[in-house]
Amino acid sequence: MRFQIHKHFRNTNIQQERGFIISGVDDILQALEDSTLLLNSISTSRFVGIYLSQVEQWIRILSLISDVIKLWTIVQQKWLYLENIFLGSNLQFGEESKRFDTVDKLYRKIMFGKFISFLNYFISFRNIKKFIS
Image (cartoon, rainbow, N blue to C red; front, side, top):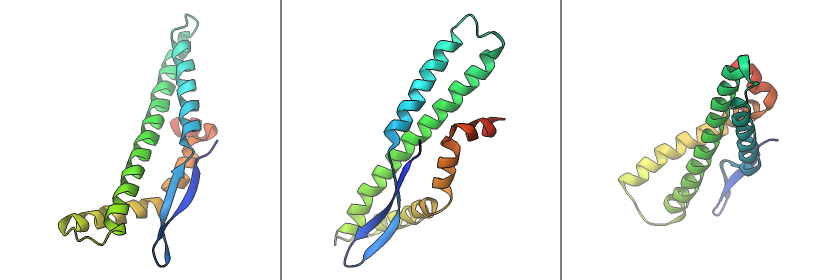
């Protein structure tokens, strides 16, 4: 299970590559939710015993991963919306345009950088285990 990563192009006279778009998060979020529910039921079992702290740690980790993915999709949606406003219109926005340019450069730097490969590395089950050890 991996993120689907697509190149994002701005369609002007010349197709301009603007970064990457993450999609296909619904299946990942569903798997995280299912695993969290399973761990919650395990944590209430009387047989959990000495593994309770590990189960609780896994619940926190899976919740954190889910929250990061949800926030990332929200940021991505807002960036796409603002990109259409600031780059797609002929209106002059002055100071707001300068602020968007700063955010846009940072966002694209992150998306062209190592962040996506880190997400795919981190989301794989084997590597989560390595990460928390």
